Structures are given as C-alpha cells and as structure tokens.
Image (cartoon, rainbow, N blue to C red; front, side):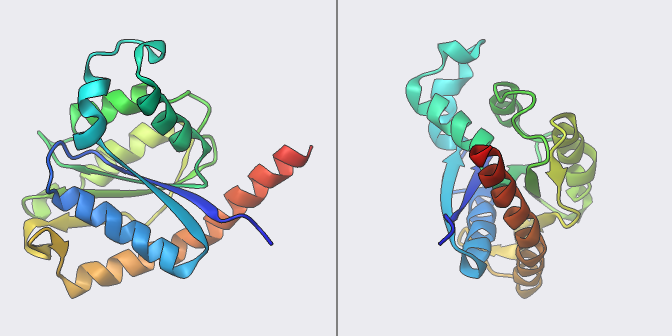
Length: 189
C-alpha cells in the first residue's frame, strides 16, 4: 500500500476570513477527493507574525521551520495569494525566500490567486509562475483565478470556478503521482 500524497496548500492572504484561503482549501479538497492525500494548510494570516521579523532561516521559530519543511517535502504544492499591487503579498514572497533554492526542483505546483475583478487574472502568469520557475518547480499549466463575484460568505459559489478547480485537480494528480514515486525511489537508493 502506498503512502498518501503529501499536499501542502499555502494561502498568502494576511486576513481571516479570506477568499484566497477559501480558494486554496477548495482546490486542496478537490485534490484529496480524487486521491489518497494528506493536506497541510499553511496560512500566512496565522504564521505571519512569527515570520515577519526574521532575516535568516535560523531565526524562525520551530513552528515556522516545520511549515518550511512541509513545503520542501510536499508531493504537491497548492499556492495562492490575493493580488496586491499587481503581485502577490510581500509576506508570501518572504516565506518563499526561506525555502531552500533546490528543494522544489521538479515539484508540481498548482498556482492560484484572487482579486477584485478579472483584470488581475494575469498575476498568475506574470508573478507566480516566474517565482516558481526560479525554484525549477513544475508549475501546472492550469492556474485557478477567482474574483470577488465567485464567492459568497467566503465560500466558493461560482459553478464555473468549481469546474476550473476540478479541472486543475484532475490535471495535477498524474504529476503528484510522479513526484511521490520519485521520492520513494530516491529514499530506496
């Protein structure tokens, strides 16, 4: 019997409740509904105060260090950020500044973002995708963008958005399986 996939979902929102966190949770739920997966949700609204003052990784509290290791050891990353001044939040970038430069090589990453309207949708392509290209991660071709109208009471309410989430989850799973098998292969050697 194979081990469950390790899925780590990161919400770059600095607020709770959060549409970004709701979107990231919905994507993680869609992935885990289709496969055996253990999901770990990392919310910057929760860990942000412990992260904000650190300049080096060794300055981080143990709880944040555990979150960084979870990111580095994941079989699939689901990342999302609200659009803030045409990019992701600064604290989201600060978190990934502490991730080992080579820990995400070949790791599948499902990109998502939220914004006030459709005009912000290209943030996935122009901001998130280049960040994870630096890490040599495998960013999935289908990103998930949601605007304010896609939510009701901080829950995904749009049928079209549910369809896009389903499509992204289905397309991610073959690559998650590859990443898990590769991890097991490296551990055995």
